[in-house]
Each structure stands twice: as C-alpha cells, then as structure tokens.
Image 1: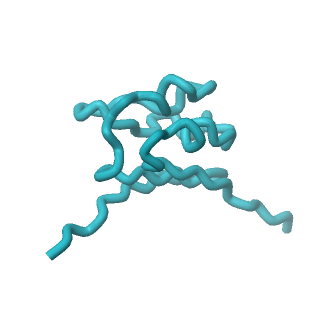
Image 2 (image 1 turned 120 degrees about the horizontal axis):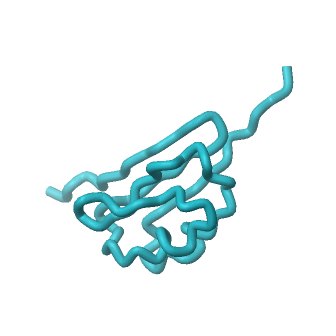
Length: 80
C-alpha cells in the first residue's frame, strides 16, 4: 500500500501555502529566496511559513524549489 502524501497547508486571509513534506529534501532554497523571510526551517530543516502574514504572494519560493514541494496561491478577496 502506498503512503498518503503528507501535505501541510498554511493559510491566512490572503494566501494559501502548501508544502509537500515527502517531496521536500530540506535544501533551504525556498527559505533563502523569500524576500519577506516568511519561511523558516523546522526541526527537520524543512520550511514552515512562520510569518505567513508577511507573505506578499510573490511565488519565489515556489519558482525556486527544485522538488516542486511548495505551492503558493493567493486568495481572491471580493468587495462587498
């Protein structure tokens, strides 16, 4: 039986950041390229968006990840 893919999802009112834990090799490239220092390494060396409210949805972490382990999506806010 194949293990389920471990995905950690972090969200605020502007952005959703998904990290595929099984795909991440903890290289730290996403952490280094984040201009707002949103990502920090956890105890395994893998990224976690500790400062998600500072995320500007630039997508540099997603673009630079060699393992396609991180996904960043903005949340559309509708005017009422």
